[in-house]
Amino acid sequence: MDCQTTAMLDRSFAALADPTRRAILLQLAQGEAGVMELAAPFEMSQPAVTRHIKVLTDAGLIKRRS
Image (cartoon, rainbow, N blue to C red):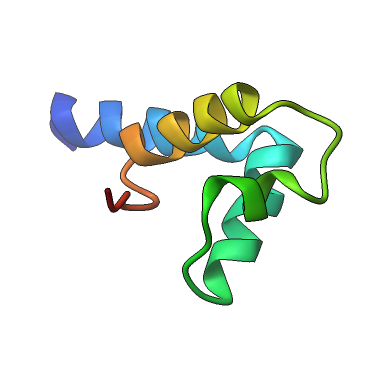
């Protein structure tokens, strides 16, 4: 396995280690959702959810639309 593949796997596993990010990923598996929709089940701010989304995006687990 090359270094790039190993780094991508590390980012994926690190992203999935957090239960909030796993829950967000499960929500998104049902279909597209906005940040406020994703934040609704959690007691956290929109910026906090945005940070979780960034981690999932950087890990290549989701894609963001503008």
